[in-house]
Amino acid sequence: MPPKKYDTAELKDKDTGKVEKVKFKVGGLHASLKMKPDEDIGKDIMEKIKKAEVGTKMKVKGKDIMITQKIKRQATLGLNLMKRK
Image 1: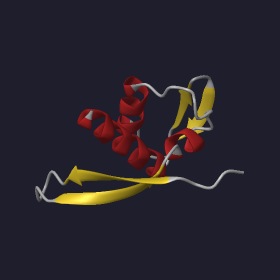
Image 2 (image 1 turned 135 degrees about the vertical axis):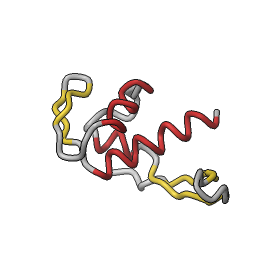
Image 3 (image 1 turned 90 degrees about the horizontal axis):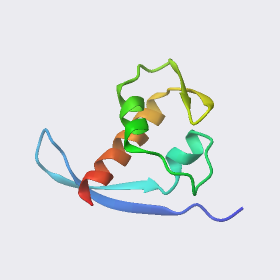
Image 4 (image 1 turned 30 degrees about the horizontal axis):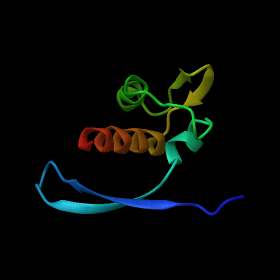
């Protein structure tokens, strides 16, 4: 098993306006959604996850996934990182 790779990003807090460094595990959302690392997670899927209630079940690319707080945070981070590009 390869070592876990971490990355950092500087994101601006929308409440305070302060820029903070955020450390995250690369591929964390893929692992949580039980997807292969090379599969694409679309923006539409991440937005659906972000809007879903914690504890609900959802189909993501044919797999039933229970929405947890962790998955919602990962999807939000993914959306924020997409906006930066």
